[in-house]
Image 1 (cartoon, rainbow, N blue to C red):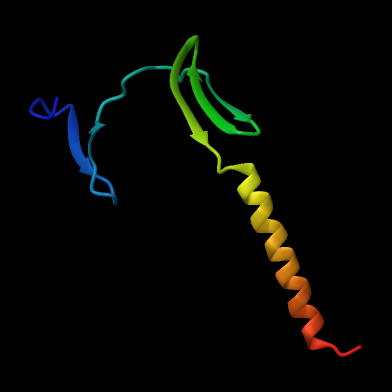
Image 2 (image 1 turned 90 degrees about the vertical axis):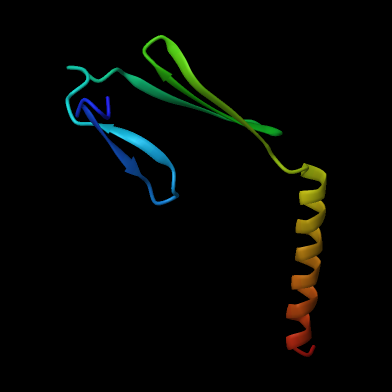
Length: 88
C-alpha cells in the first residue's frame, strides 16, 4: 500500500509507526459502542463495532483495605494538624 501510493507512513508523538490511508476505505461508519464496567475490585472496558467485540481491557484496582487504612491515617493527621493551629 505504501509503494502504490494508496497510503503514507506517519509517526505519532510517542514515536509509534502507523499508516494513513489516502483514499476512502468505506462509504459508511459502523456503529461503535464503548462499554464500561465499574466494579468494586476490577474495572472493565469493551469496544464493540456492529456485532463484533473488538477490544477488551480489565484493570486491577488497588486493595481496598490498604486504601481505607491510608485514608483513615490521612484523616487523623489532618485533624491533628488543624488542631495545632488554634489554642483552646
